[in-house]
Length: 157
Image (cartoon, rainbow, N blue to C red):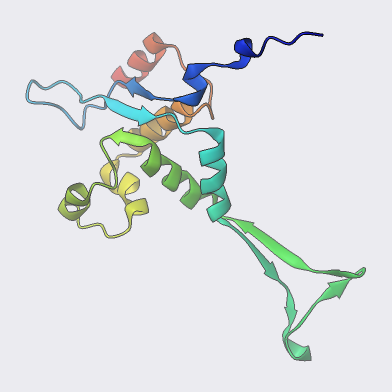
């Protein structure tokens, strides 16, 4: 069987690019128009790498018995934890191109030291944050894309 590999060679998958979304009324240009969001399309590999940064595995230890690991059915007992909130904030910071959430000048203006605090600081309004997060999820393929008319309608409401 002769396989056509050219069918699997898609430039848009290699160079993911950016996506532009309508901005929010909170941030407007000199003409009063919302400044659009520009979001980098992170690859699934990039997203997985970010998520792995927020996964931890801890061995349960018996404090009464010299802090030895707890063994159950011949296996060391471990607790796995995942900080989904911090991972989501990290994805958001890495994906945003406009505004660049970890821009030193922007962070200094808002007096923020941790780059992962920027999304919640800049998008302090719950609806603005929800919309910005939704844009990131759509751009990165983590959520279904919404019809553009529906997005504009939701922004007006």
